[in-house]
Amino acid sequence: MIIRFALAKGRVAKKAIELLVALGYIFEDYSEKSRKLIFTDTTGTVEFFLVKSPDVPIYVEKGAADIGIVGKDVLMEHPAQVYEMLNLNIGRCKMCVAGFKDRPILYGKKLVVGTKYPVIAKEYFHTKGQSVDIIKLNGSVELAPLIGLSDCIVDIVESGNTLKENGLNVLEEICDISSRLIVNQVSLKTKHELIDPIIKEFKTQL
Image (cartoon, rainbow, N blue to C red; front, side):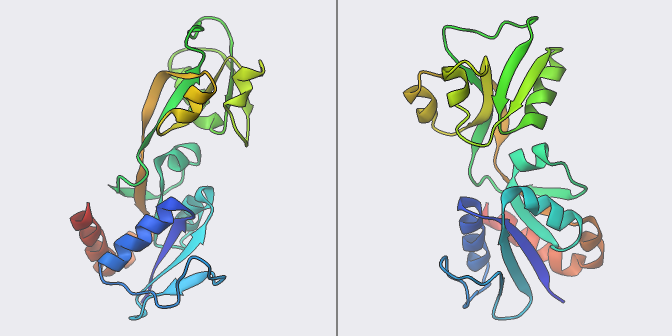
């Protein structure tokens, strides 16, 4: 019986693979330059594949993967029927509202918000009873307020350097973001003898 991991490409996957190796799983066929899609450890009991972040919860929810590692922002933006088991504290940052420091958000007036995260943005302003016009963007959202496309933006902030370089500031913090370990609901029951020890081992690495 194999336990299959779905990992979000990039820094999250790199750190997750390091954790797996630290736990004793050896993936001889893995390298960052490899074109293979699935990598299996030398014991044949654990394997992983790399996908884009928004796809991780889908693979786990549908049972194509037993365990997934992905950012909390993805889980908030793309809700899925999975169990969120651990906060791995990988890639810690914050989801924030940002804009011009000298132009505070005028609540009560309809806001135009540029963001890669329309679900998170809409929910945040809805809880404040604020009417918003959400503009979904895929590139550099910092550009939106600079050219008058939006009043503010909702985006992930790490160092804040990109904001500062463009004359923008964090106006409000929405929530903390970091990578989470999620598990398929059926797998947690049917493969618990294999999954429980893996979760416990991950805890020892935190």
